[in-house]
Image 1 (spheres, rainbow, N blue to C red):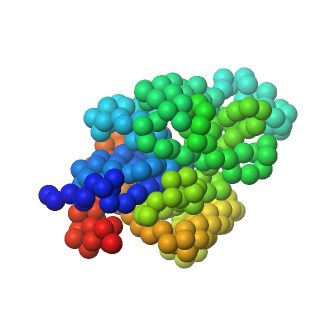
Image 2 (image 1 turned 90 degrees about the horizontal axis):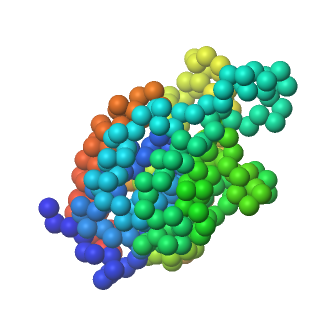
Image 3 (image 1 turned 135 degrees about the vertical axis):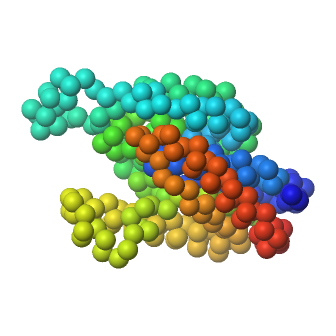
Length: 291
């Protein structure tokens, strides 16, 4: 299969991995396809699950090394809830001061497999985003502890406890920024940005489908948040395009994975890889990137 001309001899390409609950299997499959067709990015950005793969890519981890980590992942590797007496104590206080179910130490341990320890030491420029609860803003990490940055970006509210960095508490960056297109564009000034986009599942559902689900109130809130994130993402893309930067969104539509269905991870990886190869290898796509 013919590959795309190496970007360093032509133009700068940035790669963005969006947020997506346990979407790192699909992101890793996309990364493998990206490498096979010969696209060598000038920078990576990631948020939430996308931050994990962005960091692995920026650290030059091989596809095989990434697969070995992901395909052997077990729920017990990262599922480290508080002991029941701590949860009950929190309940008696109406959960005042109780910030999350999982402690996050298991997750941090898994990230030790990434060979680079500081963001600024990555072989390719990397940006990770998180939500700073203390300062009430989006936080952009381009330096500092790689593990802490990924932890902060992926600390799903209520599931994980917020991550403390320099006195501030952080949660999932995907809460305020679905895919940090503008942040990466500011960092590396690319000609093109390719976004591997994992859509929020309830935005793909039939209109008013939430009315047929249990806990309808929660689904309404969840849908409203995802609509807000989608609108913000589109505004980012429009702003970047106005600067003359091409934004190419790729959706591989791999099946979803969650903590209780990790055995589906390899299938999500290969389906995303196959779909990405088909998209990236199309003559029209190659010509668009070469324009």
